[in-house]
Image 1 (cartoon, rainbow, N blue to C red):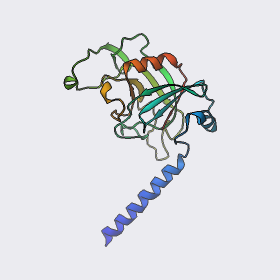
Image 2: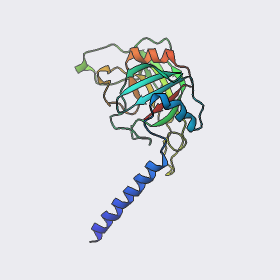
Image 3: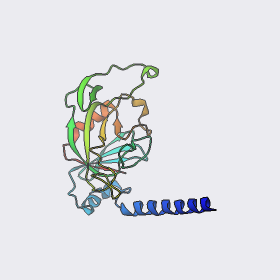
Image 4: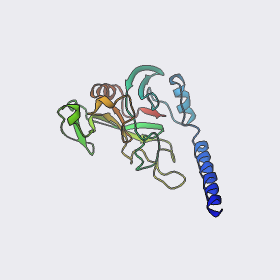
Length: 209
């Protein structure tokens, strides 16, 4: 009986915590592209001329300029789903901005280690390709919502996207694009990440949901 009562209390506590967490972040939701600027303003942030939207359900990245979708790219987000906490290897939700662009002029499939270019990866047969590399270009992300993707959450857990080292970057396993397969970052093909890199300035806002 005591064990049964314990399970009931534990189940109720889980529901309360989940409900509280969901209610505390009502701003993280699907926002149609034509409404994204208004939504960003509602969060107290001035929209940039370029805005990136990452749709984790469709595995697509949209580039907007002056509220009009100009480019659509196929991407891959975390195979573990969306989430904020460090060491969960999930793709973080919410409003971010690009605070650094790394790799300008590096050849396609150039490999980075700790954001430093090391060498150019040579394509090989898929059955011989065992590791996915950070490659080609890096768009470094900084969370803008305190307690959601910046700093720590109300429970004291680190949820800071920048400190979690979550980027938009190229992949050497392009056959995985279109399906959740990463450890938290947003992966793109070499061609697409170069194109996006060249189109957006530092400071561009990124909405992930």
